[in-house]
Amino acid sequence: MHIETLKIFCDLVDLESFSLAAERNFITQSAVSQQVKSLEDRYKRRLLERLRGRREVKLTPAGEVFYRESKNVLEAYFQLEESLRGVVGKIGGTVKVATVYSVGLHELPSKVREFMTKFPAAKIDLEYSRTTRVVRDVLNGTVELGILAFPEPKRGLTIVPMPDNRLVLITPPEHKFANRKKVKVTDLDGEEFVLFERDVPTRKAMDRIFRANGIDVKKVAEFDNIETIKRAVEVGFGMAIVPEPAVAEAKKAGTLAVIELAEKYWVRSVGVIHRSDRQLSLAARKFVDLLSRTG
Image (cartoon, rainbow, N blue to C red; front, side, top):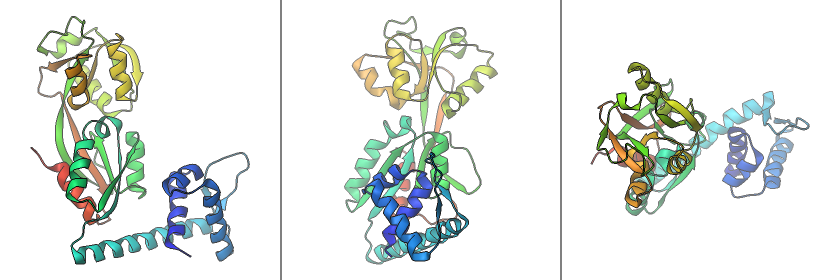
């Protein structure tokens, strides 16, 4: 039995999908099924429940034990590789990172390029997801690092702060606020807004600020994707409040007006999360150091 077989099995359980497990390991779904069957034949135990008409991955009691111990074996194997790399001073391997779109698309590309330039033997495997999924993937070990806006303290997780972002107001270029240098929160009362969905941390922060100031905005639309929000503002749906790095290019191109919000509290915190009970790989530690650096 190869270590890759254990990894495929654990990826299948973590991702809850044969297709995603196949994609992650660069094999076919049929090959994933064959690997599972080979494990079941070897140990003469059913490891997964086959539920007719349903695609979910459900472990049997034997499968629960096998999954748990396989995770331990994989952790020991990766630690062995990491220790040997440390002996020769080589920083390599793959760092699996999950992040939200607003951070991943606009803040990470330059950091990933810098990291790859410094450590060409290492690789950053970047995935985009919603906040709740990022946290879940870090906790279950599917990824080593998560990068989030407004990271919340949670048992079992360590948070490493990154430089904060200013939140800014965006409008169509012809909007009445478009030529103003600053806008106060009281100016936003009754205005039409394109908002993040309610479970998005940036939306939660906005709602808290609006409530604290007695502001009631008119919701025109809600989206979970910052690119969709920007496009909706461009075509005239309403205004939006977004992190400044996400609209730098649109400001240069003149497709959006970007206006400073006057109050100091319009700030979005960003941080890296990882499991507290696991030692980060050397490459992951170097990447976290780079991300947390100011200036």
